Length: 113
Ligand code: HEC
Image (cartoon, rainbow, N blue to C red; front, side, top):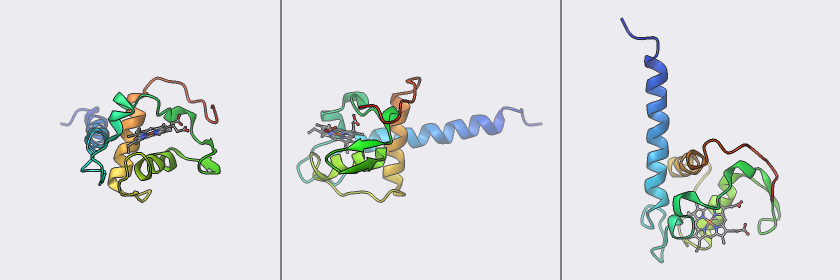
């Protein structure tokens, strides 16, 4: 007989694997397609100053209300000079998972500047 916890443990494991893959992408200029060998952790060690809990919020450099993925792409395009990711790209999903995982426990505060 399977334990009642089994499915939830399995789901947790899948979630963890996604965040782990995000960590790999976050730390790799190659995974990000950077032309200048720059990765996210160079400016955001352990996802510092990424503030996922403040999204969505207005971002002046985008001129609109941004979702977290918009700022991830902004950084991929500008400082990293890599390949912008589609919202549903597994790398984008994994980056979001990693960044949010690093801020576990911080209260949501959408719109905060
Ligand atoms: C060369 C330094 C540099 C690199 C490399 C870099 N960033 Fe950034 N990032 C910044 C700066 C500077 C800002 C602040 C922009 C602003 O809010 O005006 C920022 C802002 C952000 C934000 C929004 C933070 C907030 O407070 O709302 C996110 C999310 C983010 N970066 C993710 C990433 C990711 C993911 C990568 C790798 C793909 C990356 N950054 C690479 C410098 C960098």
